[in-house]
Length: 331
Image (cartoon, rainbow, N blue to C red; front, side, top):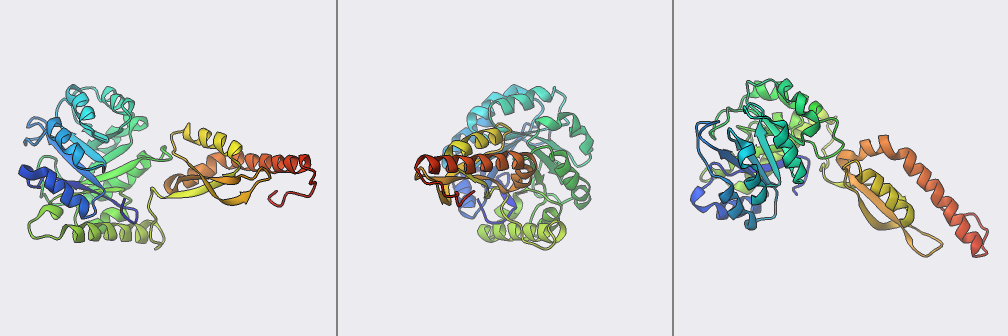
């Protein structure tokens, strides 16, 4: 992952389609965090690109996430092929005519992130019925179907912040993607509205451009926008950075980890730099994603404090059993 908060998804729509494996490797070396795959069927949009077979062939090229944006009329019909091709997230359009909920449920049942995209003229309220099933909201700031279009700033201003609110029920993993006309001229505005993932295409694949420089510029400008407009001037930290939430003996750290992960927030349990307990084993750190730190405090501070009290009593019992009745310095 790159430094900072913003994540760059490189859209290969305008790349050299005759040598996509090379293009994917090149843009990943330049610092892109993900590959954005625009699938079009010449029905939902008036253009035709590639399908699941191409994605399957590209999957061995890199381990970075593949974000599939299905601009197709019947995503449910072809969904299994895209899942089998190795897409890490799949976003469909809210404007399709087939039932949306079953498709989103199938994506999530496969362990992938599910998203809904909406055209510039489609109200954000159309996503509300599917709110609980969404991991991604994709705000289109151009009309879907072709790369290289002009960025619609009014759409970005009207939808990105409300899209964040739409995902506010998710303690971790919810992302707002912005797709269309994102480049060095528009990144600061998009970042200042709180976008998590910036889909960048033409700016990266224009002949003569230094891809690594473009990636750095877009990410830096997006983070500056976030800092100035939403974070009181403080540079943002990476959303996926892990921070310590608790430090406990192993037998107490495990149940707390399991309780947090039951609510779909990942936890790393690592032996840290805490005190060495009377049994000779050092305390374990429980690390949660920075983006879920506030949620963890709100929901698990009481459980953490209770576990800390149990740890103090446990240490005292071990010391007493060993014939040392001195107070436990860690209590």
